[in-house]
Length: 459
Image (cartoon, one colour):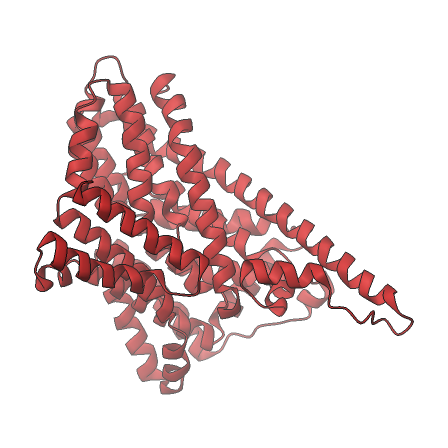
């Protein structure tokens, strides 16, 4: 058995341990990176430390600290209130607005983590107000970010357009953007419908369980714990209270009675959010660095927000994501990813190579940076796209969608930011649900887009 295969199996084991127990998979992965990387592969400790994703760390800490301040100051409630007033009685307009807002930010050039960091807290708050599952709202936000991510000015789009340029199809950049936008819009509708249907069925089971308890004795207590509530809570690893509040039912009158006022601190915080967008899109400043600068300015203006904002940073999620990505970096340093890429390139059949490459980028991107994955895979995609029997725009579109659609994974930046935006009691619910959705995307999407864009030659 080769070292590369053993290394991949260790990653899978760490992933499984974190999924089915309360042990942090990132902690397991980073310890495994030091143990396997130094003792077996022969890498030095400093080399392994160098694989720690410091940029990702600052994005996670900076963005969650800034939006911790946004929460503490009540600015999220203000934004949610404004969006609520815009939506009026049209409940289904809420996810549409959040999708378009996130897609617009990404299409304008905002790095997808920045767009998600800006919109996710507002979207989840709106979901609570309108009785919509926060999980379905989160999925809509991520699909919105992916929908706009392949515009010519977004980092994802820039990398994908390099592949098109190398394949002699530089004029197809707008087609790439349109295909990715349309695919993610359809996927957002499917994700929203599936999660909402699941939540409604779960709520009915809860109601039936409670009704059975109340029917058991004249006093409304049968002497037994409701099996439905307990079993669901145990399977998901969350409290019964969290299950009851994941998609709270609120009447229109209840929502309308809540008026959120504009205060000086909330107005300054809104200016800070706008500054984040300008700094990251216009000046190209790193999302994490910009977030930390703006957070410090807000703390200097109102020092009382510092303590609760720092306490709101989801350190467990930070360890989880950075630990996994550190291990993936160790895989790259030992040549495991390069070995995998060489094997793909040697297949000979370009269509089959495109399909396998789609699955490879989907799996790797679920654990690592999509930007990094696209950069690494580009040399492999170019000869495939140059095959005269295939359309370059079809190959690149299939790879682009396969690499980005798994960003919902809790081990990716986007998925981690979504987890960070959720309430603490919902963290494990979000982790498992996002993990299952990412697995489904890995299984289905690469094959689907390969068939549509490569085999059928749409482009």
